[in-house]
Image 1 (tube, rainbow, N blue to C red):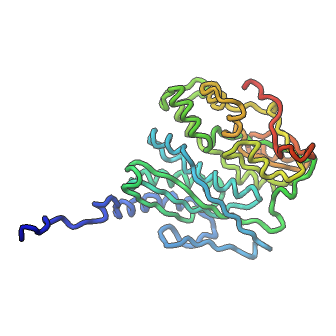
Image 2: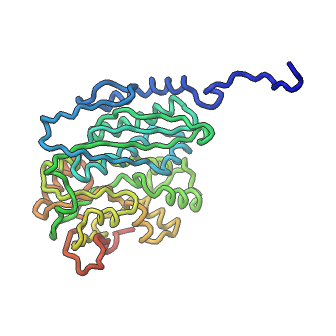
Image 3: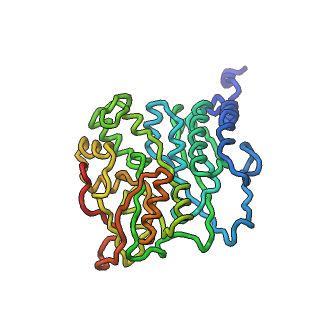
Length: 361
């Protein structure tokens, strides 16, 4: 060895760089049983191939239209990571995707997930997929595979993020949308299970930083810990909405996510019409009033950030209101008459507006 020769080094490996193929393989084996629970007869093959296969039975559909939606969970993941509870945010992920699909009347067929991690922990990945699988079962769709990507140097070891894409199908002549909405139509509200998956940056800021409430601390108003309240899985409405479409004349749905109730409802109200939402028809859950009070958050800010207790809205023909409420009640979905659709007073009127006051809020 000459004086200027480099020092001998060990051979570089992918594992030494931070990516463990063995851990990835172990994670796949651990998640397979959960993925197998979320299936449909149309699925061909199993988890592990380069692509997921789904046979679309054309004899069942006259003129099928495919619908697609992609979404994530947002900063609710920070709560799951802080509590080391990872088997519920997968349900939230599915809810965000499939309930966007059902708005147009589409039946969710399958979902593919993407899990980005700093370092593969097989048990954590399996817990995440367990939640995704449970969500798919609730929605009636198949988990057709996905990707777990390890990003050392970009993400910390315990960090992860989730996203998914779902595909659904609806008959061309059964697509729901704003063009079907008429003056006199009524709004049916469907209760949320809580915050769902939107507004967590504000909720965490108010409750954890300003309010200094520990995630493990019991909160009397909730009847459980703050962490349990914040990790309550998002209600999935897909099967309930499809059952409603089968039994009543539904014009369209509005999935209440980021932007709040009025903004999301406005997306399905056509020009020239105005939807009024009666705040007096329901009382938001205690978590919303606690955020408003502890953070001194103005009502307008609350209503454009959170769902305020309403996770889905059905717009139905007025003569179908009682039937719609009966169908949802039989399926144990909290529901009520939320408002109505009228002609807009003028061109400057918003397409959707909350009026009145909440009782006891």
